[in-house]
Image (spheres, rainbow over the protein chains, first blue to last red):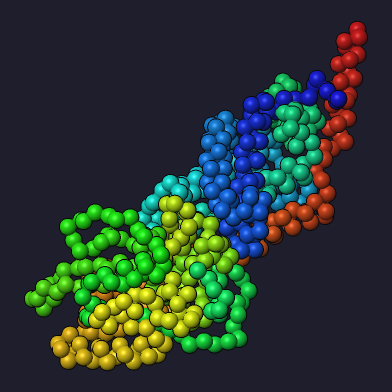
Length: 206
Length: 302
């Protein structure tokens, strides 16, 4: 076991558990939702015990994700307020993507990109939840025009959300030393100083 | 109920063509509203042939019974009292699936083969493949499919596809005592309708005409209406039905494009990693931290 007592605590156990509930339900929702999104993905219904079970389970998984997401939203909302430094970071994001972070401004716990991701996911989640309720025929029977609009919004927001999560996951894979924060909550001091210097100063007092 | 003896022209949630080589005659049911006496023999025949018994409901003070289509009532008579040309008219329309040439239910359905369209024009639900999502209800411009509370499957008029497959007319047609329901090739039905329309015009219904809405590519259940200019009079029969633009957007080209875009994000990420390499912590910062630690250890030793 490698335990450096000087590693920095980034997430509490309860924050991590919360994120995992959202993450697992998202993966199950994405796979079951894609099955109904386009015929090319229909075979994914076999992962859920067949097409009828997929139709039954998908909305309940959605309720779990929506509830867990709301909790996560209120936990991290105050850390995702946009600052001028975030806007500067975003204006230089092309250099970052190109693999050169020398000109990037100092960032706090989250950088501008992560904050945009946070708000974009929050909006997508809100749209998914509302439109999902509208098209949930097992429990709701709304006027057909509203159901039609709900179906379009649900498909569009779902596609956007899958795209956003792909970027979210890739960013964690790309920036080495990040994924451990999701597993056991800590990051190395060097990682923090490299990627989130403002936060590093704040927690170390240096 | 799908039968292999009928050629399948289109099936739901299927992106490759169904059997196309054999052309069969397009059929149609023609409902002459002007000759209907509202006896409901067709409702009974439908229930008999399909062997489905709906709940015995209550009288609501009107002739309509049952009041609406259901998973167990695939056709219902809709009675409307209207005033036209200063005269009271009692309009009776046999409601049920219109068997659109461009079916909104089939377009919306996400389950492969749960909805099929035969080469003869019949649109049929194959409950075996139905998953109960209700998208067919969302797609239908005529508000026809119903989801059963018992089994969560979608049901509607099959135009007696099982009878038509063996050259029999649908049960409702057989039972009609006035000949208000006719069945045959779509061409023959159009010819027959033209005669009925001419007759109605002679009798003073200037706006009599055939209801075969082109917004859904025409239908395989058509009406002869005395007021073809006002189909809405007949218990809200839509004047220009078509698949909602929202449904077309939902089920159109947007999804294949979105799928490509998502594949693009996934491949883009992969190639970013391969070409730019991982974003590691710089050696410089690692060394800085190590020096700090060494210094701190020395201080402690003192």
